[in-house]
Image (cartoon, rainbow, N blue to C red; front, side):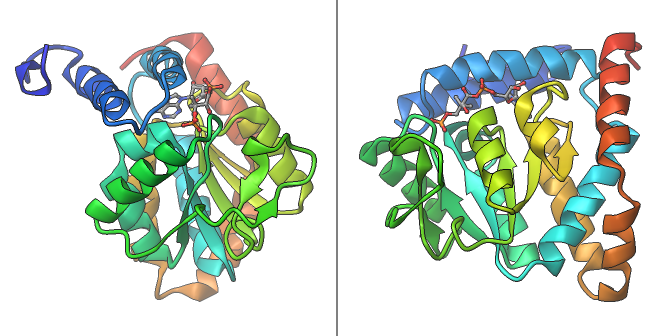
Length: 248
Ligand code: PTJ
């Protein structure tokens, strides 16, 4: 079934369209085949959470916006699933917060790095980092640890949607404030994050952008929003929502 063949009145039309974006990402050399498995896991959690932004995730999204706005050198990290699912949203978020965009892959190849950077530029990104790879994340094996010295390596706040657990932990170990978007609250990446956002990235990224636009001219509010966010409570609330299975 092609993208246009998904009927609007199909009860799962949104998730079918998302799935097609991942398929197209694979065809375009952007998304890894493992990205399909990640998408399937994400869909299962999204179904259980009711395919909506729960209240604690909305609070996390506001805290994420305040962190990105307050940061000296914020970076949005992009992998093959994020590039396929939400390239416009990544560029909008970077514009709204002043964050740099860096491609950082689990299954890194030069061909995929270039395809993703081109894809992001086609969607309006003026600068895409990650191709220089002149620094390393300590403690991670060669390909996975490659980052730009003036990008993720120097960043104080990093937004890592759909990160693998090892790298999320290694970035936290480097002292970075991490914002992780992941629908599985039990996965190691949100567990390691200062701000775990348990929401679908296709909802989370535009929501963070909206909060950033709202908060941009009110810096006096940032500290209170950041300090008022309770990461443990957010993780527990998401787990409760998933386990209770009370769909709206
Ligand atoms: O492009 P690469 O080479 O960097 O590879 C990226 C993937 C995603 C393949 C790699 O990081 C990976 O294998 O990820 P995992 O270990 O499968 O973890 C993916 C996590 O993201 C799981 O916890 C999923 O529930 C979650 N997830 C998947 N899709 C979404 C999501 N969370 C939020 N929004 C989604 N759309």
